[in-house]
Amino acid sequence: MINALSIPDATWAFLGLIASLLVTSTALFWSIEDQRAKRRIPKK
Image (cartoon, rainbow, N blue to C red):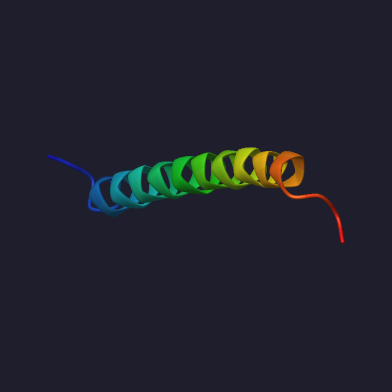
């Protein structure tokens, strides 16, 4: 028999993994975009 806690734990672990991947990819994307914007637009 499957332990009652194993399914919710696996689900939350999976959701946590996806969330961390989303945060990491978003942070990388914005840092790259920020660097491009700084190169393109001179500081006022």
